Length: 309
Image 1 (cartoon, rainbow, N blue to C red):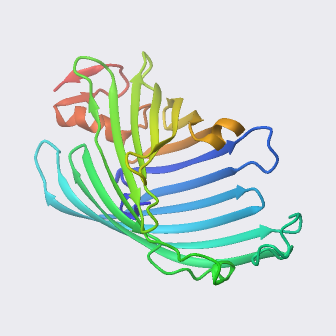
Image 2: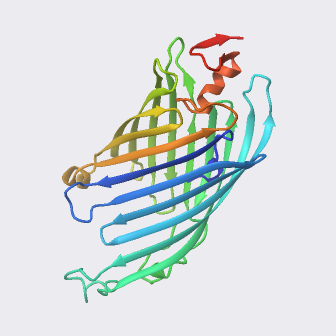
Image 3: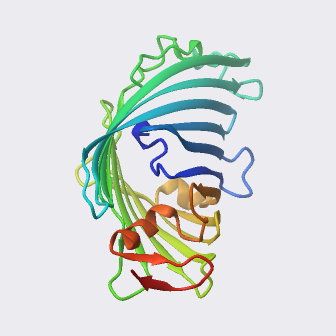
């Protein structure tokens, strides 16, 4: 959603993905897969490559997006709490298809139903910016900048493709006196069709007695905001483990709309690997250990525990 987030952590190479399935036991239930690779490509430039595959009933969508980000340092402090502005630009290639051969009762009633298999290719672009200060960040981006150019959707019966606007903000901090790391994140999206959404997320990281192993969890709440105070879309709870640079977890999404309540909820399997340059990859991400380093605390190689300088 924000290409400025490509290679958000400039000291790590990250490969992450998820597999999501909704409505178990329902034929042609929605399934989604995503694979993302983010890496610094030298200096202040970051790269993000994203492959996305989605099936929703008889409709399929496959997308490839490449984004680049450029970071401009605004202020550098000796304690490491630097301030920078990041700009990002991304390009998207998308292949869509729909199989209408098994549709019943629609021919002659709906002008866009023809009982054929259709496919189309389109492209688009997005742009964004990100302000970072220490462990805090806030961003804004726009997606679907270009008008609709996929021939599948160039019919007069199809609506115009709206530009989506995204705003988000988050931070990370350690609970005083406890080995607990919190990462709150708020996200808001809107467009000209009054399609708005609010996401509120809280992530928790818990290290264990073994420095190579940590636990994590996420609580999330999603809400539609297009009418007065909106309506609840769903809530989610996720749990997982980090082992050295590997990360795996599962999320249960509890749908709160009428359709989701009737057909069931969704599950998501998440996985990833982080390789941090110039240091041993441990259970907590590199970015979350940086605050301890900046405060004059470091890990002695080959030994457990934290030691003052």
